[in-house]
Image 1 (spheres, rainbow, N blue to C red):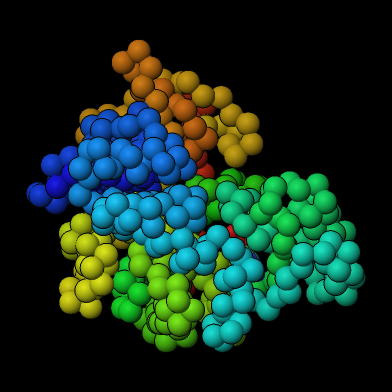
Image 2 (tube, rainbow, N blue to C red):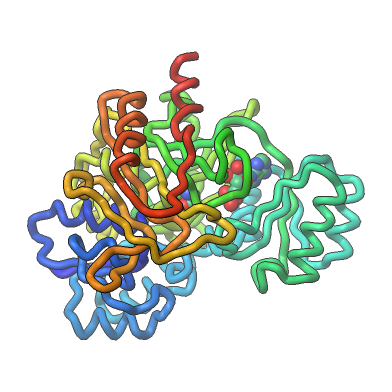
Length: 422
Ligand code: AMP
Ligand code: GLY
């Protein structure tokens, strides 16, 4: 089979490596991929949002199956266009991808179907939003409606901060059209858990739980990033919590989408907070998380392509999806200064013996050498019997990988290890 994976980051590299384990896969094209994936896929320089070009490429190259990984092409409707051409895909169509594409939509869905989430108000008029903030409980959370590269969420500790955030989004249009509508919601507390799931619109199969580390600095300080590391499983996600989530959140969400005529097929990501009042939804994503995928897929024992095709063909209930009972840690190595300003173009060397578990996010080929080309450069995943061993193995491996200005957090997994001791 000839496959095509849309996207270019560490998540896509992990998906590609896993798909390559299937013996029927002859070739994988990555559009656009990145220079660090060349051993695993053929990179084709077509942007993930250039829908027309992607569809043409797929038709001309007789692609048998496509995996659309990033949010933007999903929200723009790439899956609909590929399916029109008869190319089977993994990923939701445009109508279903709105669950991530619009926070106003997802909040209204949860309200209508009584799915637990932070209470909220939505606004398209700035004066009304500002008036509401005069009496809103502080801290409060301001979210831009549309996609904003994970940066459209402000936790405001004071009333003035909250007002400034609303003005930035609605008046200064910091996030463009994404900020024309805003959601102002209740500030929740509790451990966060990421649960990625496979769903064919009827059956939902949660993958192993994980924990992201979103802030740039140790001790969860500094700016929000795309994710500085992950561990799986998440120790806060006990069997009892999992059962509640299935009954109160996962199944109700999949059923709600179906009832709305927006059947969701693909990977539905539940960003959860385990509050004192029970698990609540912080956000939905219509795709695999990054860097959650880099710990979840290495623990998947069942063949990934088989599961994906079962999703596409709506027969997920007929297969068993198994995960290893080991633990995984993914440590992200970034360029110093990320997520604000950083230099690129530094030579990058990854020892041969680490290549099977290093997922490259931002690298390019230059004069036959690999050089850094992004803020997040790569992730190193270790799978071991215990979380302690997995964390230690990833930190040991980081010492073997060299590039100038490399930066990583020193405490990935620390919170999870502490929770395991309690
Ligand atoms: P999101 O992009 O919606 O995942 O939000 C980014 C981060 O902001 C989340 O991972 C949480 O840590 C935090 N966050 C979002 N919404 C809330 C909320 N209602 N209460 C507390 N923290 C939140
Ligand atoms: N790691 C969070 C995300 O993929 O959105």
